[in-house]
Image 1 (tube, rainbow, N blue to C red):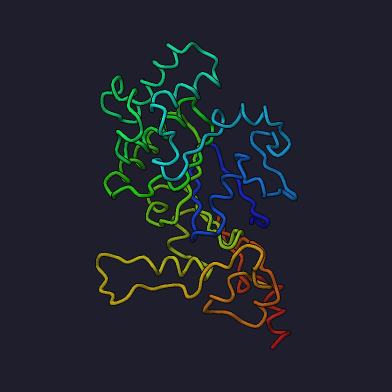
Image 2 (image 1 turned 135 degrees about the vertical axis):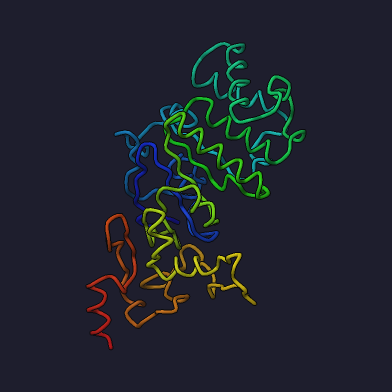
Length: 309
């Protein structure tokens, strides 16, 4: 369940969305693509993409946008690809649907894009099934499928999940190169702060369906402001550190619909005060390009804190 999530993605920018499992990262992506579960209901707001509100597009209009102007790399490539169709067939299908070209031309385009994503011998591998490929190659096929129509926005949901470190670095480098070549924007969703540090221009931290901090990437790592962000940062180990035990954030993300009153992070926050259980902090700018939703930076909430003591 998302609540008041608001952000923009600038042309040519990489926006990173980070947070624990269950904080609403993937739901945000599915909302943009209008691929929410049947039980999900949008109760308000706008989804503006190049002047068009995606929430008010018809199903046929969304099908023309989805996979064409906005493309998505889903989690777990081994399960996202259709096991009974060849890799090439799945790319060709998307190209023909959006560009209405011949099958022969679409096959040539598919081979070209497989070559772009560094699939060896694309003329042969285009006829391979997903089970004949490694996890890294399946991920490259997913990227090829997403990029075949040269989208303006690419949503990458955990694009390096289940990949070893070497392949992960290759995939991220590939995405950055393709972004530069095509000029597209990328929204990358991950729980890995290392990926964010290396790849994102700007980062948004989510917790319990809300954005709790937003900043350009260097500022976030130099000066995290939200207690949740601080906890995430402290959980990262460094090669020159000798630690007996990893730092953890006590507790877990509350289930949707069972959120605590006031700040949703207060049951796990080391700085909690009485006012944290009463006031809902707003996302407030604390410095240029850095906003945070924390009672310690909200003047109104600070006054309330004094009043309740």
